[in-house]
Image (cartoon, rainbow, N blue to C red):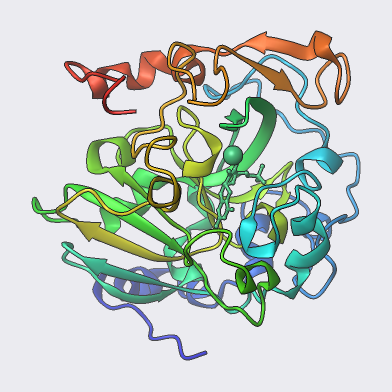
Length: 323
Ligand SMILES: Nc1nc2c(c(=O)[nH]1)N[C@H]1C(S)=C(S)[C@@H](COP(=O)(O)O)O[C@H]1N2
Ligand SMILES: [Mo]
């Protein structure tokens, strides 16, 4: 794969810290201060990396949930990644065929800095943070996941979006040879998602590179996936290869496939039911009472509990109409 080096700001940066230019995938996570031995090699199977007893310390983090996190094995074996099949167990079985190194991302549209960038030139190791977020799937289950990632707004700001950029669209890799699920039209490929620009520039969204202190497994969206904690899980697009700054509301896969069921905004909202089921509560996978227990049901929080940070984005909007 040909990777054109980005211009201007990266080159300036490289002159002062030349090692960054050659930072490899392993070092992206290692830059967080983790032992490099704890990182899964890209050449290895990615479903069950060896996890030494590393204790994650979120005590000083503003972004955490005081509940047990969903066990690693469950976070990495119960996935929605339709490019590898529609069964929850398919991604862990089949995502190993995805080639994630090297990886480049195309940046297009209304921004001063566009072009094709190597992943290593978009993600700055020193900007990575650990944050615990609840992922609330539209199917009314949730998991509590300790992510590693870079705040989305920091990455987007570096491309210098212009005032015409009202929305940002994300596109997942589409490579049928590496993604067996795309042989069937479960969705219209490639997978598309989008945010309004002010949502994207909010402090909460992460571009995740890892979870549980490890490089993100392929079934969870390696090498780079979005996490938007106040929206249903499907907004958190995986294995991103394109970022587009656009003027009009961009197409999103689930809205395209069933516009009556899935809207552009898709904010977690217990008051607005999905046409076929309630959104008032959710099953906490791997929660205190175990995988399938009815006792681990919890009421769903407005904006998934992140209202303080995001409710103001929707002031004056009718969330029943703009669902
Ligand atoms: N490219 C792509 N991204 C995707 C999906 C998908 O099918 N394809 N599924 C979404 C859905 S419905 C959910 S709930 C989350 C699940 O993320 P996880 O498997 O890491 O828990 O990924 C989202 N991102
Ligand atoms: Mo989902």
